[in-house]
Length: 221
Length: 221
DNA sequence: TTCAATTATGAATGTAAATTCATTAATTGA
DNA sequence: TCAATTAATGAATTTACATTCATAATTGAA
Image (cartoon, rainbow over all chains, first blue to last red; front, side, top):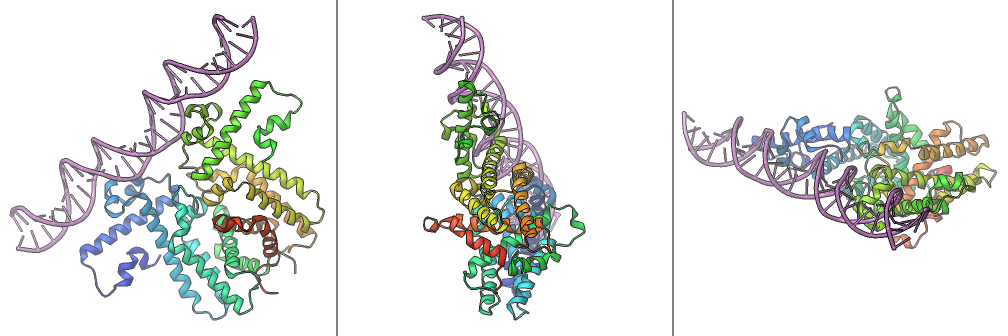
């Protein structure tokens, strides 16, 4: 996606001045290799049916090597989720910041978010098609992931702004309303992912539908 | 829930005149015992972490006994899903049929659906919180389950009726619009399931919010 | 009461992966 | 060039269940 995806964010972005030793850098690159492979395999098989061997093979490493870079399967998976969402958040923050009005911010938000899903459809297929769920899955922990909370909060803030500008009704809380936008959004993505006809229509074309539905509802005017 | 939940639907409802031998009836009751236990355990642990032993223990049977009544873990799980949804569908069909106008049908639909979720929250927690998903999970097959298709179709029909009555806009297809109602709905359920504060507010109180949001959207009038 | 048929039991079996670790290879700096 | 350090390997170990099955208990018809 972007450079931050290739190399561990925190190192690159937090301390860009301290350039790492080649060794360290190589290590991060190898880690990134494995993450890349994991992304692919998880997307293909889902969390439970993806095996560490699959991932290792895909990354052209031996099984054990994966454990040199990640504590276990679960933390490998979560590293992935965190990275994806933090990329997404970064994009959303950057792009929406160019707009002033809430309506425009919303448009950009929806559009960029869809675009990101479209570009990362393999990855999000796991989410949408398997698991933003489970408890067992540990995925209950999903919702506790700070990046995911942040995404939700971001939406809440947008709605709040919309309320201040009297674009959005205020008889319900921003959080409550935001929690309606996200699933409308997700359902469109979800249905899009299911369709074979994907080649034809682009996901980001659906922006208008989502915003319209969100703001105006299904009722006839 | 209802009697049909206790004893296998098809036997009871399809041939009520042929009363089964006690043996047969007992068998169905034992099967139902296991289903009941499975429902509880799956709800608690999710599909993957629920073990057959857990279920057997809960039902006060030995492990192997479960296999006398169900082919394997997966089919046990699907039996559950099918039964729940067919109960739900039956209720929805019956209750909405008393109304004539689309708007009223919609109200009833939402209200009854929420009520059902509320009464069956343990079960739906799996769905909502883990998995109407996965590929691996076989749960990809979820969406192919006839009961789930039927539920979706039911919503589409309601929307279609609404369009005919000019309650609902017609610039998008009934299916597309129906696919927005369901997730709005699910998100409310989902958020409700997460809250600790559940004791206080009843889920079915949320009916108004859902219908309002669905028909009027979040935009200020 | 008896015995065949039906059910239930839970230990044993099989399988599939996750994880570990002794061994080998590669890299580094002197 | 040569230890010494670091990394990679993949076979062996462990774990965790699902599923089976020989055995025991229960049932009911005669």
